[in-house]
Image 1 (cartoon, helix red, strand yellow):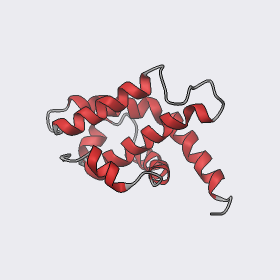
Image 2 (tube, helix red, strand yellow):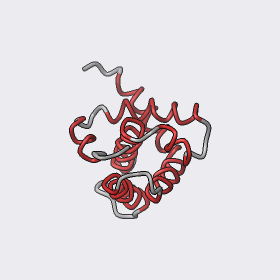
Image 3 (cartoon, one colour):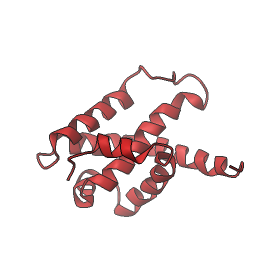
Length: 128
């Protein structure tokens, strides 16, 4: 793997960090929506709790690496939401434009590629 992947990954991480408030708002809305299956709601609620919790796998005070776990969780959730949950339902709770969601989705897709698809399928199984 060439070193050229790092600048893109860094930009994608920064984009997701900037979008975290919108991501948390969207997840929170989806987690209480009656249409979403219970298994998906539990996964989304766990993600929100992790993202807003002061306790992390990698402490946030460590430069750059401190936010890596938050970014990966956000990437998995955004990628999962857009691949396993009806897009209209996601847009119902997304506070920005559909275009802004697509920009965040592109960044999430790149970072979530580091996570095996079978894990994402398992997290979001039963989603609509």
